[in-house]
Amino acid sequence: MANKEAFLESIKNGYTFKGEHFKLGCAMLDGEVISGADVFLPLKTMNRHGLIAGATGTGKTKTLQVIAEGLSDASVPVLLMDIKGDLSGIAAAGTDNPKIQERYQKIGGSWSPAAYPSELLSLSNEKGVRLRATTSEFGPILLSKILELNDTQAGLVAMLFKYCDDNKLPLLDLKDFKKVLQFASDEGKADLEKDYGKISTTSTGTILRKVIELEQQGADLFFGEKSFEVDDLMRISDDGRGVVSILRVADIQDRPKLFSTFMLSLLAELYATLPEEGDLDKPKLVMFIDEAHLIFNEASDALLKQIDTIIKLIRSKGVGIFFCTQNPMDIPASVLGQLGLKVQHALRAFTANDRKTIKQTAENYPLSDFYKTDDLLTQIGIGEALITCLNEKGVPTPLAATMLVSPRSRMDVLTDAEIDTLVNNSKMVKKYAETIDSESAYEILTAKLQEAAEKTAAAASSGSSGSGKQKEEKSLLEQVMGSSAMRQAGRTAASVITRSLLGALGLGGRSKKSFF
Image (cartoon, rainbow, N blue to C red; front, side, top):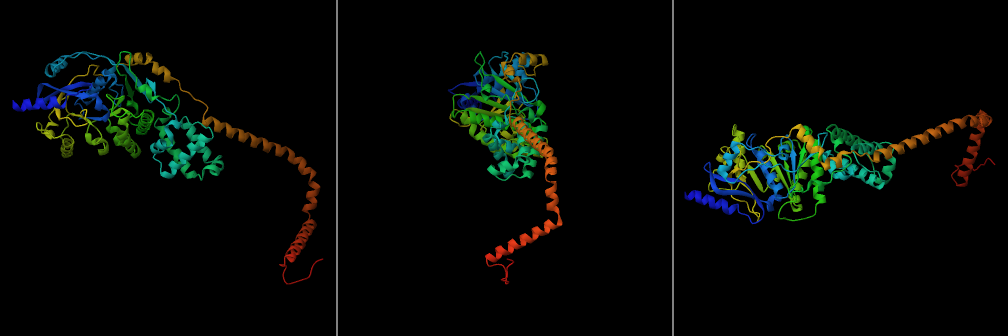
């Protein structure tokens, strides 16, 4: 009994916050829900990032949904990276059932259905708001990283961007960049080398091949106009709730470079655009990346370094990033160390490696007087998780095995008809629906090369028409000049002149005789 009272006091002290917060569930001890041991999440530290981990089927996607709902209710916009395609249900109200009622009898409170203000986004031809960025906005540094270029090649890309800036050649899509690469390695090479330095055709060829590889993964759909404005991710609905933007990328999970391209662009744009804020009372935006192991397993070193850097810096801009994955060891240690909130669902111990992973995972959590963490990781049930977060002073809260609240929105996907309705009623879809093909580097260079070709052809034609007359007029002169006598006279005169000049300079040899 004393142990239960001490546990209740520990949870109450650890999860009582002055600022805005929302309930995530109720803490358990020895498998029993302890009444009054409510576990809350403070909005003030939600920009310190987080992890939601657990084996398949343990409820981590529903936990993601619950946290997204709590943020939206608190007027915090949310971006969901829906890699499996199972998060769209947040836009529809949930349905009551006996299991939900049974859960709430244990954890207290009441459940009511709710649909959340949502926007569907797409990087491809999926229905929803089309996300694009121009090549110029992406910039030479990020483009070089995503193409995995060496320093020499990256320097060449930077030089080409500079040339385009100086000569007012807009780089809007990959077609523009490919044209500039071709121009730099052929017709424009001499012109560029005169002002910008040596250009290696081997390097331009390598870069071109890598751009084509990126295109084959669908990146040509991402680069272009109209550019997506990051402010459109941070909208508040008419009823005061934060808009939940759902980026559906189920159709590109086998194209890691396209997703890497988008991630680099979005993180860089958020960091560059948003002002420095420090620790706000609540974040300006929280991003959830579902099935994050797909990113880290396939990501280039450039993406990993960029995410690591952004994780460290972007919290001061008021942005939180949450990773949802099966195994916490999927997250690089440098990133894992930056994640303040940890929600750990059950892990499975089928192999020796699994048991090693469980032991390592347990060591990442605060020590507890009430739990043997590594044992508990294999025993907690579906919809239950080990929780620790940062309090308002940035100190980790006590570890709490928690029975979680249920999502209020639908725990399933939208139907095709519901998706059509959501898309048709969206002002954002209309705003970004049109594909704009403005005059850019491709059109300007193509026109320039065509004009040069036409001038060359005209000059050749003019020279050809005048050659007959010229040949006819000079035929007599040519006959005289071509005769053997004339050639001999020329050689004699040249010899005399040469010797006279050398003699005048004192270099004519020993003989003092002159031909004159």
